[in-house]
Amino acid sequence: MLWAYRLGKQIFSDYSSKFSRQDFTHPQLFACLVLREHQKKSYRGVEALLRDCPQWCAAIGMKKVPDHNTLCRASAHLLRSERVRRMLDKMIQWAAKMRMLGLSIRPLALDSSMYESHHVSRHYERRRAQSRSKHNTPPKSRRNVTVRRLPKLAVAVDTRSHLVLSTWVGTGLGSDSPHFEPLLFHAWRRVPNRYFKVVADGGYDAEHNHLLARQDMGLRSIMPATIGRAPASDDRIRTRWRRRMHKLLAGKPSRRRCGYTQRWQAETVNSMMKRNLGSALRGRTDASRSRDLQLKVIVHNLMIFRRSERIETEQERVQ
Image (tube, rainbow, N blue to C red):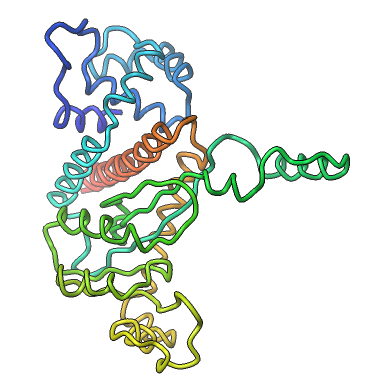
């Protein structure tokens, strides 16, 4: 919560207008939103939690607890896309000063993952489908319609620190290739070292993505050439970089040497966010679910900063 307040002080102004009520500042409300996501609470739940812990409010200078409606409106106001980008910019600047980034020795990893649009167990869905089939009741919605509405989050991850450098938020299944460019560009512009290696799975496989990374940005891209028909030999692959990927990733030793095995760190980050912050979203609309996903990324990065600070404090005590 203190790290979130520190971040909010550097991103937001205290008030939207001089005519506002000025009961709470924007950094204070942002810290409450981060606490809500960290504790997996609803707006009413985090309001009750803050009432039970007045010392937390005092730590960020709040004299009273904000109402749940205030927090809901603050979420729509503070978690806009441009402000989330500014927060990620600031956090990567922190990471560079703390020497947490490791792109000079490890690659940047890209991956995407689907989240649940509501809190319901798979067991409940399966038993409901069995009950409807038993009584010959037509289902209310088809499974493919449900999947097309699932929220999707793609991340670009520093494989050394597990910090998320850039994000892409969407809805439904589909190819990962179209959001390769925004993911890579925002990660590339944020880090001080702009000569690194980027690894991604076969979902990002495309010749134009290799050209974007290698010719436009001067990076080394590694993606398996698995899109389309599985080639029996590299003679079936007509483009230059995809043919080179087919040869480079043919065996396990070459995969290790080129650093492609570090791609699993991106899946580790997706697993960390789902285990620590939950895999289901509380929003009911696409816009609110997008804000929930972006807030998960911010909280994940703040948790890593907090952990690194605690480790440094323990080392100083030992010394």
